[in-house]
Image (cartoon, rainbow, N blue to C red; front, side):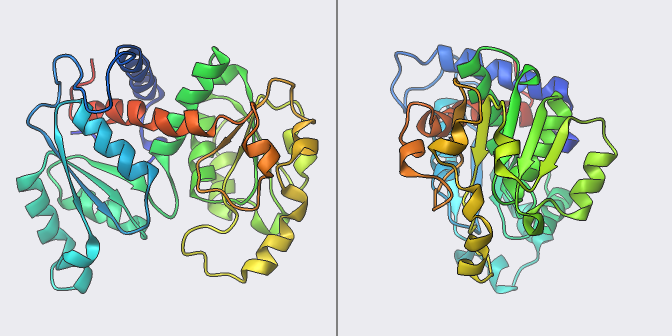
Length: 309
């Protein structure tokens, strides 16, 4: 049984197998509609149970289509409907029930410890659909998108992240170490990666540079990533925080420091961190990026359920 909680815990060999499978599966669906089932229906009879403790659009839709296209079904649970959320049932007991009814469990959670607790008691795979410290399914899908557009391995590209240090960046850092690509991070000093992440970077051979200057981070980039500065449930003075990021806004001038064929990616939803001109430009691949999550998450499900070909 294989879980998919953090990119740090998965070998680059297995991550590459997932990406290779996703590429094959996407190519075979060129003439199929969204709900048409893949040839062979590899997950026929399998049930994916999903639970969202945080708002979700792309993760919810993409996992729904992923399991459907593989021939299985999905059931989405709301935390407020469960005894668990009211403290009337333990994670242990909830996990045992989930294991008896489902074949895999996807959790989008507000606490990292819940992933580990569920993993401890589940007898089915658990997939991290987003947690406060990481968003692995998003970043693996983004690597798929980058390599598809650039037609070369990400290890040969210069990647830039400009914005807040958050769960998505944490997974991008882990991916940089796994896939050995150059990553330049541009964030205000106050919002750069925390001590644990810096220690992780230092303890691994890496190509990661951190700047408090957006132009330096964007210089010669093949890809520029960003994310919403005010994240879900971000309990801060919003105006004060946004003020720190005024010089880190993704606009046409900042994009000019990157390579001419640089692409812009954003995991969405967007905020004031990117100009409309860039977001809707030909360099922006955000819609391409969003739909690719279906293809990669199909291969993640197959990996977790031991069906990856």
